[in-house]
Length: 484
Image 1: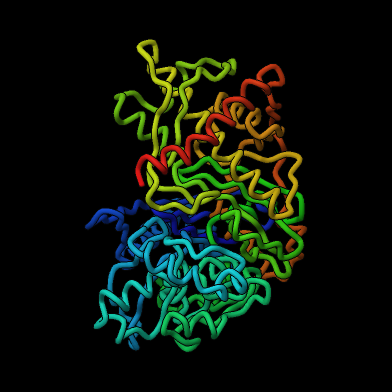
Image 2: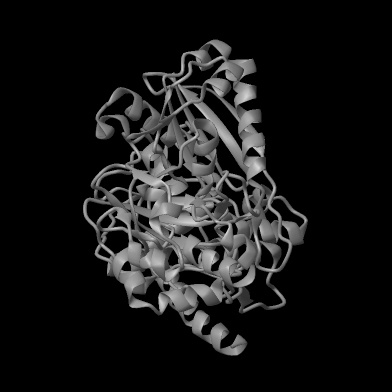
């Protein structure tokens, strides 16, 4: 058996698979986010441990024999979080999460230093780790003075599981401290934020062993001590391992809280000017690019909350047949936007509203707005040298076939729907645990699932969607100018 542990923003998932990669069982525990000030987003790392304990305890009750047979563990986690530890590995303050925008001024200042884009291949986004540390230095100097280690969220779980400070390439690429082409910490970038390599974890590839399970925890869970724990991956790279998106030309579109258009690459292809993320993949000598939109299903959930109708009810009102855009446009920038604008301050909008704009029209506009945001990411990937011929859909929003038809038509690409199964980050983490424990070929393990159905672009609406997308493209500069 092999165990994948995925530390998300809203919960921890523990997933058991067998040697044939069939899912055996899972456990889950919820997490909350603290927002003490506008733009802040934090979690107490002790809650991650509590949730991990609960998720594994659930597996111990439901599958004790299988849990006892685990031979490898893989980790996945929310990226970019700043977990600050003192010399005794005690947490100094709540972790500043990926969707925290307090360090936007610090990020802009670091991004103005040409070394950061040159070495990391990325814009320094406010959500990345490095600007958060500059914010702490500027605003909480007493805490900064005690800082001994900076760990990403999943690597704090690794410290608890193994007693070791270790990270891996895919997650570390989102810190703004990694030389992404060379796959190693940059002393220059660390020095620019008043840090040095001693305060960083050591680095391995995601498929390599990165510590072993402590005997105390093994005894508590009825497992063997010393089980190897893989380097693992950041959540999107782990999902890609679960989806088999590991070779050049493979891609997926993720309709989760945020939205991701993810493409695997056989070489390092940075283009930070397009606000595309270019990160190391979890597999050696492999990279990936991502276009990221901050509010995907979050946009529909927002409309659901204010309309008093469930998200499923809203999409059901549209039926199954894709409709032509109505002239009502929605910008899904409810918490700012990453690709292609890198704008933490911009906010969403409806335009083109009229007396006849019903609830269904607003729902349609929200789905189209998110689809057009993915089209922005597709255009940005193209500028970075990546051409896609099809994508696979994952995430909770992919249950809506209407939404997938809108995305296929907006992208002009077929969208594959995988056969039933859980191919997300926890599954990818379990696969990495299997590879680290057995030495198996990553490309033979990280295969793609069978395709259940393919949604083709609706050719009859391609021109209408192209016109609506051009209207959408004109709105950002107009809204930006009006709110500057």
